[in-house]
Length: 601
Image 1 (tube, rainbow, N blue to C red):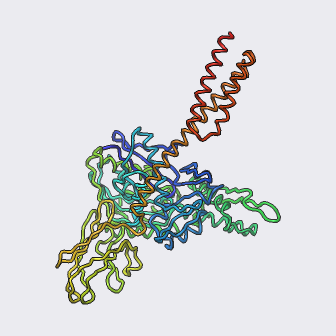
Image 2: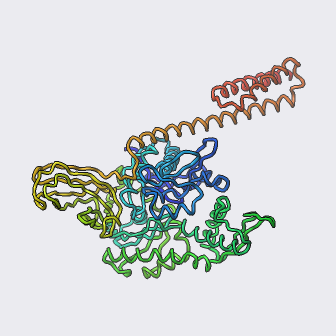
Image 3: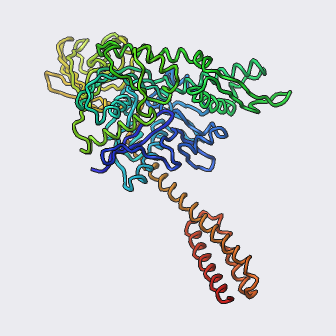
C-alpha cells in the first residue's frame, strides 16, 4: 500500500504530514511554511490562488478571496450560523437550489466542499513533491462535534481533490494519538481544541496503545474567527466615536481591520499591550482618517470573556458524560492556535484544576495524529487501537413530531442498534423513515439527515405491523439505516447521503474540473518558466552584443539583432511551443555569437 498522508483541514490553517521510518514528518508547502492558510482567491484573469499567496491579496480583492469556508460546510443557507457569517465576511454567500449555503465569486457559484477540495488538492500536490510519488489515500480530520452532514461534505471535498479519504477521525482524537504515540502510559487525558472556527473537548483513556474516547462535546461555531471579530467591532465603534464615520459598510476597510485584529490578537499572547495603526482607513470632507489605537491584553480579554466562557460548559458536560471528575484527569492537551491566548490557559486550569500541557505544537499536533492513523492503516504502526465515539445522538421522528433516540451520543463506534416501530393508522401501507441527529426532544429542533419510505406493507389494523429500524455507524461516523417489515421480510436500506451533500454526478464533474485545473496550473507554471528562460537568454545575448558586437561585420550584427528582436516579441505569447522554438533560436544565435568571438580572437 502506498503512503497515506494525514491532513488537518482547519478553518484558518491546514497542515499535512506523513509517517516516514516511524517518525511523523510535517510537509512544508512550496513557500516553505509548515502550515497553509485555508484561503482560496480568484482573480479577474481566471487565476486560482491558494494559501499564503491568496491571503496576501485579500486586502485588495476581498470579495473574491474566500476564508473560513469550513464554517459553511454541510450547513443550510438559513442556519443561524450562516446568517451570522454573512454579516461579517466580504464575499457573497448565496442559497443553492437545495437550500445549502454556497459562495458566489465572479459570476460563478461554488459549494463549500469544492473550495475545501481546492485547498486539499494543494496539500496533496505538496505531499507528492515531498515524497516523489503519487498520493491517493488520506486520513482527514474533522471537529469532534461535526454531524453526519458535515462529515459527508468533508469526504466529498477529499474526492474532489482526487483523494480517497480512508478514514475521517476527530481532531481531538488525532491530537491524543500524537501525544500518546510511542508512550507506554496508562492515563486519562482531556484534549481542549480551540481552533479558528470550531471548539471541541474530548476525554480519552490511553492504556497500552488503546486510545478510547470516553466522551466528546463542543461547538462547531466557536473559534479564533470570533475572537478576531470582537476586536474588529471594538475598532469600528472606537473609530465611529472619534471620527463619526461608520466602517461597517466598507468592505476594504473591514478587511484591513480583520488583518490588524488577527495580528494584534497574536501579539497579545506574548505582550501586555499592542498598537493598531491603520492610516488612511477612510476619508470625509475634512480629509483622510486614520486609526491609531492601543489594545491592552486586559481589554482584549474583556472583549472575548463570553466566548471563553462558552467553552466551559462543554468541558463540564464531557466530564459528566465520561463519569469523571477534574481530579481524575492526568493531563490536559491544548490544540489549536487560539489556545495560545493566556486567558485560555487560565480558564482550562480553573476547569481541570491543573495547568495544561503545550508540549506538542498546537498547530501541527492534529495532522501528526492523522499521519499516525495512516501508518496504522498501512501496517507501519502496530499495537495501536482507536476507539472513537458518536458526537450526537441519532434517531427517528415519531408521531406528533417527537424525536426518539436509537443511539445516544458518546456511544462507541463502530456500532449497530435497532428498534421496532409500528403503524399509526389502519391499513397503512407506507411508513416514512425520517432520520435525525441531535439532542432535542422535538424532531424539528434536530438536524434532518435523510428520509426514505418503506412501501408495500400489507394492510392491517394500526399497531399490528412490526417494523425493525436498524442504525449502523462505521469508524468514520458515517450512518447506514435499514427498515424491515417483519411479516413480509420487505426491506429498504440506505447509506445516509445528506440533502446538503453534492450529488455523485456533480462530484464527478468537480473531480474532472479539479484534475483539469491541476494540469492547467502545471502548464501555466511551465509557460512562466520557459518565458523566464527565454527572457534571460535574450538578455545575455544582447549584453554580449553590446560588449563586443561592434567588432562583428555589419551584416552579421543585423542578422543577430533581427533574430533577438523576433524572439523578444514571442515573450508575450501564450503558445508554449512558440516560446520553446524561440528558446532554441536564441540558443543557436548565442552559439553563433560565441563562435564569432572566438574567431575574432
